[in-house]
Length: 417
Image (cartoon, rainbow, N blue to C red; front, side):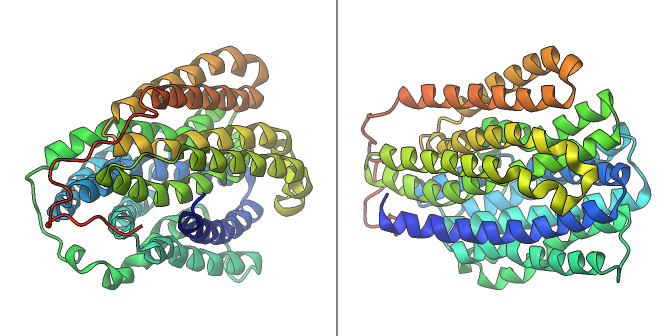
């Protein structure tokens, strides 16, 4: 793997691991101080918030980064801002309806939820601008600053200085995202003016929609798992499954770190007509699988020790979910090639295969295996998604990357990698 890419991925990855550690500390504090049923409600709310927040992204960030590099189009920044505002407005009624349907609606919870969506809108917009400029420190700090605040609250919960309630825990989870707002001052100069530009919004939305659907399905996986657990059992099982899910989903950090670096890098390769480095991708995938093996080996050592005996039911589920999360992480970061090639339709096709595999397997296994049926369904669907993505990539692997007309003229300077 090229040294520069490795350095960037390592920096982003270490930042994400540090952020995850603080988030894990907060999760531990909430899990230990709330009763199992209340923790189940908290888990359902937090995963639902993350799912609906993806309406605000809906694949547009990645399309924006790839297109703005390939086209060297400065106006796309205001187009992205306009699309984010429109998507936030759409997410508000969706949020309220979802809370009602899941029977977890009240005035305070709804207010926190909507403000949380607004916070994520800001976060996703800033993230796209930092990623486009390859300002990875700003990109990582967007999540580090909120996680530091959560770390403070975790200590307050552990020491009983503050007694958490459902709305307090969920409020900290949601509203701390606003803490990253001061990073506005570190945005690239051209991104500091928020101008409405409806020209090109439809095109950006149309191109990002397949990836957006896939993104929502991927992010809603935990919500889907929790909803099935709630329907078949109750909030207690939601808490057990959710804890195993959250720990296994640490592998999404690996995917996020790799994707954040390789997307602008591969977009620049497209700009200059250079072939992709498939060997680099293979080495990264192997590293993620190796991490999964290590995590499985050590998973039983700390679950009950850290979270308490009430979560002992999570231990055996965790091994299956870790492997599923690792496989999902691999196919997620590989999808950056589809954004660069403007073939996001492949992403929705892979998502349909993955979701179908999950639904069919769950239908067969959940009635007899309960939570284990959900876990095995995750693994089967992850493998199906990876196989599908690899198949699609094999269809254009080895093809030369044609230069875009005019992209190397004097007005179009490739971004430095």
